[in-house]
Image (tube, rainbow, N blue to C red; front, side, top):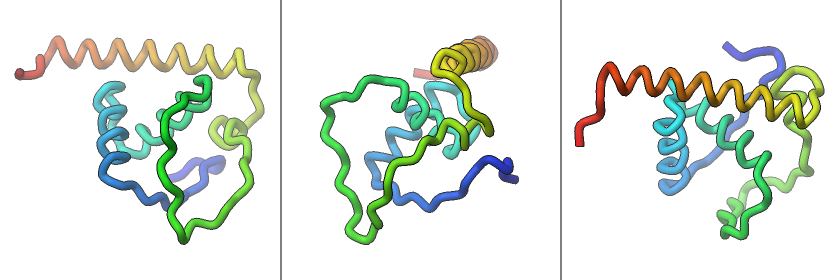
Length: 109
């Protein structure tokens, strides 16, 4: 079920993208691929631009102007400081949950 502030999109991923999102999902202990995509987008939006090569745009994809997702994600406008504080709290909570899971069921090497 979608929150009223969420928008459903169709996104095509290549194998490299899928592996990257699965890494985010494992690293942060997320339950769904969708959560990992949203977290990756939020983290990337807060980081300075990297000089990494960008993936090619699909030929069929229409060019769209950039929109602010902060209001869509939160349902209201928030300051950068408020967003960072929320992200940090969320990150700490997820880390605690992941560490608790690892203590219960350590990974096999």
